[in-house]
Length: 187
Image (cartoon, rainbow, N blue to C red; front, side, top):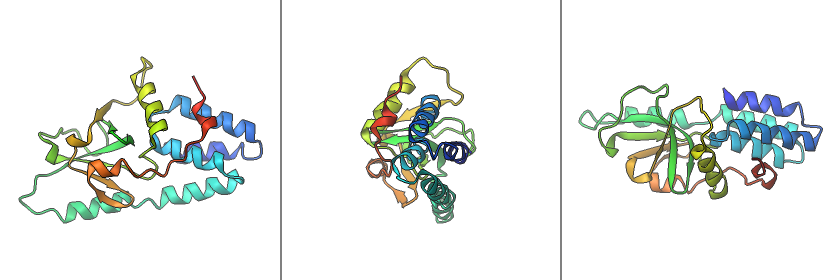
């Protein structure tokens, strides 16, 4: 629910560009680990009509096909295939994935990489500058409300994205998150 709530909050500042940028920076300062939040904030801030962009972003968020792709992939599993452990991607970058350790998909941990699948919903995969910012925030001593793990593509069997199933070394190359310099400037 973080992204829809953030979109709703940002629309309150749609008529004041400076306040919109400040609100987006404040959101990202407090929730920097979520790629989808970078995606939403970036898309809204860069648009000449932030209010219309917010509605468009919300429509795209609601229409994200990632879960449908996951459901279909799981249905196509053979009986002798290992049962995958599925984890949500908070953010993915060119060289890894920041995952939610204990999420709604379950408590079990994979015994080998063939069993680990990741879901990287819309906006979760970010470009290199945003990825580096996220890694910097993650390595800080600031407390987090979510237990996170950083995994390399070699530790993952498959990544489920809005484009479908992708090998983990390719999924990190597809980012639709805009790089907005104004959003990169916060402590």
